[in-house]
Length: 258
Picture (tube, one colour):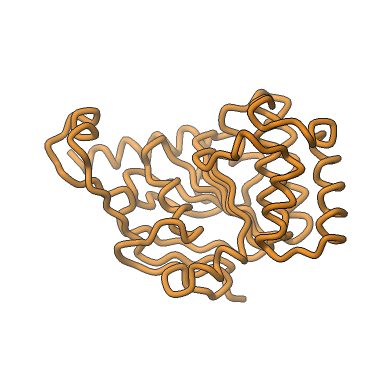
């Protein structure tokens, strides 16, 4: 069976401003965020990209969501090239990232309707889906509240619901539980498992070991924009904890770099 997502030798380099060079304490004028990344996500599985902040996870997901164009390499979502047909890719996936903020002057109800229209969702289907998702996450009580007045957890739940207006088969989540309290994080984690049960393919990024252990079928450890290891949890850990396996790989990567 063809994978739902295929990434081959993906590479992305950004030009650094003078301010960025100062913050990063470097004289280099460019930074390679993703450096020859290769992996695949099978249909119906949850695959996690695990790595520290700055490892290139968010850049990778933004390239897969056709928001950033790779410098080199290829990536396909359900056989569609993110480079050659970005608009089609955006219609296939559901994408959630904390870096893309909801407009704070609008309500969850308005935003759900707006994005449903963008995805050409029929009004009857939209209303049924909204009722189900808003009820599932407790958004219904705040449906007419401005996003600016919502709690952090409710904003995340609203973002999650909005990303699913078109019932996508491939879902890409960047740090889905980052910054959430334990109760909201559990709601999101449980929902990921529910989506998998519906046959959805999910790619997520995280720096939280427990999230990978709870929900991921397979994971890739990304360090310095490169894939340090990929496989099932038993393959990655080889009898150790996931945390120990990660830090062993990290130490080896730092040693190679020096």
